[in-house]
Image (cartoon, rainbow, N blue to C red; front, side):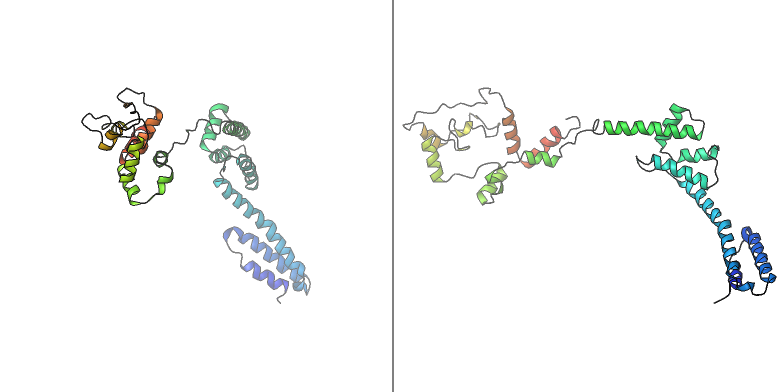
Length: 296
């Protein structure tokens, strides 16, 4: 293992540069003088510890100062709750960097690190002249901003509007038929009609006086409320043979009325049913033109 004097010489040989040359030469002269005083001093550990301590005292503060001067120039306030941290960090870096908080250049660096909106409010309403004025104004306006944000967090925001797919889902038929994939049901959904009646079903409906379209009593199929409006009550459309025979049965004939011809008031359920029964392209057009408009 090399002795302390040789260790000092090797250590000083690695320290190069114009700014440290004078210090290096001074340490080298001191080490040589110490060794020359008494034989065996080159083996004293005191020789190494003295040079190491001198290096730490001379250059550690310089490194901290340079680092602080670099960091303070890029320091920014982060997030809504970062003002206190920003102020304390700025003051600490200014102290380590050897800055005077009263200097205009230092105040400018502090202002540059604030959010623009906050800096503008302080400049507009506080007319700051010193670092303390800027700090006090920043705290004042930021505190007000946080109170307003907390107090009116959910006010003034537009309510979420349903999407077109959500509207379309709302006007989709629900029930047992929704997942029925039998050929007759698939064809009925595609044409917005019920599956065709077989002979047995038709006979039963005719005897009991039920509508062939909606399977309800009280009207003929040509006056059925579920029939498209342009075809409902068409005078050229003749009653089906089965429904005409019903009028001659022993049961008293049901009063045949067309609620639309009688100027029946259209209800909300009538409109919902019409949209629900419409073709997909028609349904999409209605949703787009009525429900998706900006002012709806």
